[in-house]
Image (cartoon, rainbow, N blue to C red):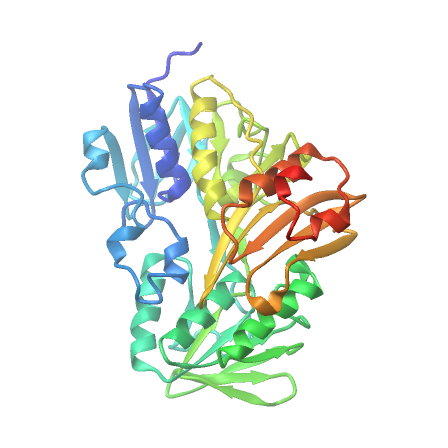
Length: 408
C-alpha cells in the first residue's frame, strides 16, 4: 500500500464533501484540500429547485456539513478558487489564484454546468439558469417581484421550477420542444401524466414548440418568441435545457474523456492517481456492463464514499442502481434503474395515474429494467430487488396491486 500524505479534491459539491468525510471515516490522517469555485461551502443541489425555491426551507438546510465541520476534521476549504490546470507528471494542481497544490491522489468532482440557450436575447436581464445557490436566490427574489414566468424546457429542472413558480402564485408558461415533458425519459404513457399534472395546476404547457428568441425591452426580458412568431409573455425567463459535464480540466490534462471523465468501477481514471465522482464521472457499471454517467444527487453522495476507498487503495465497485427523486406540487416520485440507449420494450403501470398514486415499470425481454413510484412509499427496496434479480416477471402479477412486489 502506498503511503499517502496529500489528497486534493477539485469540486466543492456533494461528491467532493462526501469523499472528504469518507476519507476521515476511513482513518486517512493526511492533508485533504477541497478546491471549490463558489463562495459557499459544499451543499446539496436538490433543494434549490424544490423546497428552498418554494420557500419551504431555509438556505442553511442545503449544506452538507455544519460550518465548523471542515476545521474540526482538518479539511482545508479553498473557496472561490478554481483549478485551472493539472500536471499529471508533477502530481500538481494549479489554481486560479496562482498557487500549486501537490497531490498523491486527486479526485475530480467538478460536476456539470447548465447548457446555454444560443438564441438572440439570451443575455438579457431576467434570463435565469438554475444550478447554484446564487441562481436559486436570484430566482426566488425574482418570484417575489414578478407575476409571469416563462420556463424553457420541460425536463426535471423545468418541471420543478414551474411547480415552484405556480406555488408562489405566478402565471407560468412552460415550453417544450418534444411532444410531451420528459418523453425520452419516461415514454408517452407516463409523460402524459406529468403533462396532466402541470396543466391541472394552471400551467400553460406548450409542447412541440421551438424558441426563436428571447424578447425584451430596455435590456430586460419580457417574453419568448416562438418559431411561429407567437410570443409567450413573462417578467422572468428560466432556461432548463440540460447540463454538460465539466470535463475540460481533465481533457486538457490528457485524461480519457467521453461524455464525462472515463473511470472504472472503482472510479479510477486513465491515470492511476486520479479519480472522478459525481456528475462528471462516466463510470463503468459492473451490473449494467457499460459506462454510465448519472446526473443526480444520490449518485454524487454514494460515489464520494467509493472514490475515497479507491484513493486509499481499498477499492470497492460502484454498482448501485441509479436513483433520483422529484417533488412537484403534491406529487412526490422516486425512480431507480437504468433503461439505457436501447430503450425498453414495454412500459406497464400498477395502479391508475388518475388517482395520483401508482407505480411504473420499464421492461425488456420480460425483465424489469427500471421502476418509478409516484406518491407510493417504501417500495424502492422491492423494486431494486426486481431489477437486480434479472428474472422474467409475470406482467399480470406485476401490474396487480393486490400482489406484493416482494413475491414476484
